[in-house]
Length: 418
Image 1 (cartoon, rainbow, N blue to C red):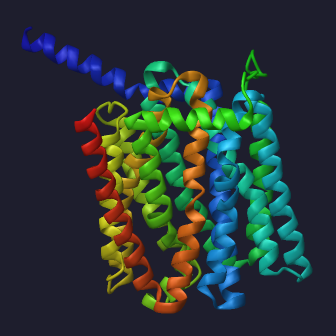
Image 2 (cartoon, rainbow, N blue to C red; image 1 turned 90 degrees about the horizontal axis):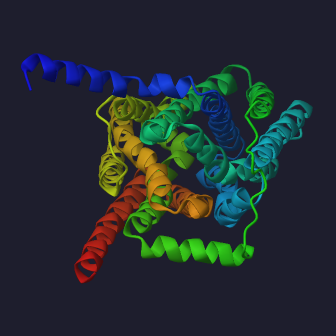
């Protein structure tokens, strides 16, 4: 091929890759699901930080803050697998409508209690449980719907764009939550969340209903979950996805639950500065998501997932020793490049390696693994109260890194025997 022909071919390839985002945003259902996901996720993180700040001010206990955060993730652990079965048996669009409505109801109730001056930490725990229902169904309903609405050739860019947006909202939500809490109080912060959850719910109404809205399943709920678990454990890629998801959610992401205590003790900051610290990793993940979405097309695989997760765990061990706020923020932002790979491949591998009739159930199992985060949240909170937040972060991240390396050794040995 001549140099001119090669240049033209490269130009066409670049245009095709660069056009993935344009094609996705021109796909109405994908666009709606993408936007409503951004709104709902931003409000989720806003509520979480505002609730954490209020609880820390009211109790001065990192363990109490961890308990409030734990309740939001508990439905993912208890109901994540069940949500996957329901998402295959019933109309995913209707499920999503009810999940958004439940989030709005919980935020509205907290707003009213705060205005009346009778709010207590246990109210935030109950609201966290209600909001956690929407989180439990996120992956098996909205995320699957978005992936299926995208053009087939754009699956990885579609998941990466959705993940990148999730990273953006994990940055915007805490920033907005910290600022609103500091300058306007909890009722304004959570009241805004209630309003925008309702906006997201109305956006679901505009998504095209599936022609086969009701999906009959030829087995019981527990049998369906068991079948998906056997399938996942027999498949090395799916097994790695579940293992890495467990490690990251128990030992890595738990640091967010003690950020108020970490910021106050290590750097003497609070409010908006805590929100900015909470936004560091999501901002890094935003950059990482842009890299995946706009860069060279990356096929779904477990190698980027494992590498990105390992990098983040290594950086978290360094954050524990950080002498300055700026260095801690920078390390968390750099770690976001790794979590972007983790998040994009977490869904992409399932969507390509699991049979289509089992995808929601496998995604439900992934959700259950995400739901194990309360174990890490409670542990890091107890460690922080007993030994300080620096030691708590170091011990959790170091343990996660050890387990990641152990899992890789076991997978390598199993591959040799196969």
